[in-house]
Length: 306
Length: 306
Image 1 (cartoon, chains in turn cyan, orange):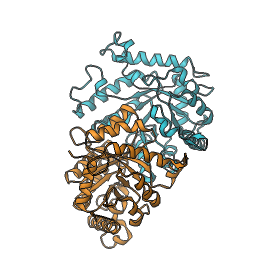
Image 2 (tube, each protein chain N blue to C red):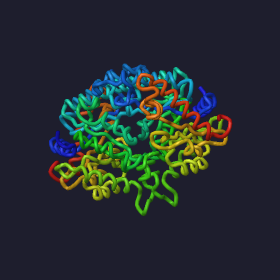
Image 3 (cartoon, chains in turn purple, cyan):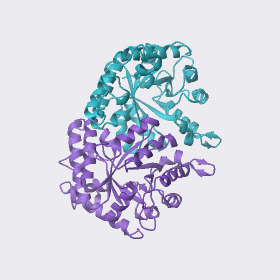
Image 4 (tube, each protein chain N blue to C red):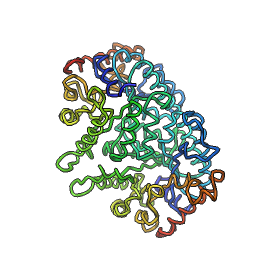
């Protein structure tokens, strides 16, 4: 199989946009007809999540290159949720989408290897079969190595948290160490890992998570981490727009994928769509919101993928 | 239900020792008769993990206060592994053990809430039903709040990574910020959370993970974090002994639980036990290794629980 970073380049160029759709199912936000009245009936909720995510995937697979299921919402409903998660990953892959599992996993040594071997790689070797996994760096460089090694072995990817989109991310990430914020030290470490794991297109198997809510730092990190794909959260519901993420791309319009979760999957509840589509036509709202975001990003994208 | 920190005090005092047994099943390390020849037959491996962990729990439940299943090894084998994990947590609880799920989860806002509500609390509300969860702090203070809030609401606990036991933990955790290593800044944040969530016994619902492999820092943090239960990894296979963890306890012999995973659950493979017990009597080896660790710790413990 091709190198993950090259597959991501190809997928973005094929769809001509860098939109990532976040699959964050929440029972209370599901459209009428899918929402389960007893949220503690975990089996029913898991079935609803599966059906809902399949429905989102059906709509977005022809439009975008990549999706990002959020592990937390599936874990919230127990083992039946985990089966739904595995089914959703497989369904998305079968529809031709790349899949990043957002699990922010982290541990040391052979425990990190267990996470990596579990989540990364194609079905058969991996029971989950995701193309990439988000990883948290607090445990240090030796905790990242097992993820990197497995990613390389299995033509998969890793996205390491560098600068997150939440206000409190500053608390540790912006602490000044030797004249630079800590996230830059992490960014340097991640860039080194990317440089060690390059594909043909100039990007490594190790990317980073950099929030859209800090546009200046995002553009600055783009310059400092030339070999890292950026996974950019914070678009839409968290407040960032297309202008905020413009600095995340290289001159070819590559190097960043921009995630939107609630703004797309629960588009039927957005004020501007509620009247027009309502709950019954929630999939049309997903399509419309996806197309709108694609257009917004194309307007700020340089280069060949625009 | 009683406050988590008070339940932990009661459990340690009842068993008269602070030993935590880590449930880290690995197919290749299972005793003969349990090991599965095809490690990619995830259903069979999940069944073996369930049987093995039940067997460990049967032995250690009368001896120690608490166990710590490692999520990674169950996730490694997919959704069937997650069902085994849920079964193991329930079985341990049913045998009277406290259960800390070692998942090192971390995320922001409502996603963090989803993890917390999924994993923390008794069966019914939580499909997993663990008494506490390990959490990673890189995303900052607002990412910890949802875990803390759910822990308080559900009489559960959270252990935040502060100073980890691996060599590479230094890479970020020991960076100097304002004259102090970063882990002390994290420790201060965690101590503040503990102080806000006190039980009757002087400890909070928020504890921290502090490795046994740095004995001086461990003793120093004990002084600086008087209201935090410490979860201390690194004993046994990672090289630390009883003398190294002595500084983790308060004058009553409380305030720390010391984890041992491989050294206990795979004791049948330890050189000193291999001849005596072998694979067939692996549960006797688990019992012997547990008793040995209890004795080693009692020799260094001050106060009433010794």
